[in-house]
Image (cartoon, rainbow, N blue to C red; front, side, top):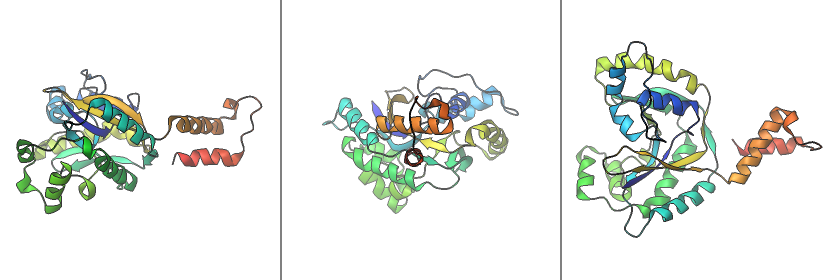
Length: 266
């Protein structure tokens, strides 16, 4: 069994539904999803180009898959993740876009997010004690000869070359593509995800993913950022500010309190 700490949108989010359809698998249930009708691409084309990310599911990794340290247990990991998430502040990434990532396509912020970069670094530092040391085979699979000096250092210190200053938030949508496939896939992919990318992406939770031997990765549990009671009050204040009829009878809602609640969500 391996674990990973990632971000993925809530199950009911339109982005989750669109990504599940495109990849052909729901990362929450693990069940197959019906492939979308995409102009210029057959269902077989989509299935072939998405084979790699389908196995790993729709997510942005923060702490890549790891085996538990012998001194740690899953309940300890869950408890630590719950407390860690509760101490974080939710935030937004202004806008995602379909972007080329090497020979692949994925979703990336139009402007790098400092808040996400810091959150990812904190996750790696906080949960490093839960990670078993890499085996020689795992190190070799990382192809260390192709790594830069900072990436090589990260691999041996943190178990992943692409953390800290090397971290880039991304959510993969395809595996490696040949040049002609990249040209054919790009426009349909942008059209498919366009409606989901018109609003900022809310980073309001962390997801613990699990990977059982030989099985695709899936969401094990999702952990809200911030204290749940605070989030609930702020969300209620948002709704009341937008529609005064939702406020309790006789309630007086001073403007400064509404503004404070709204600012707490920024």
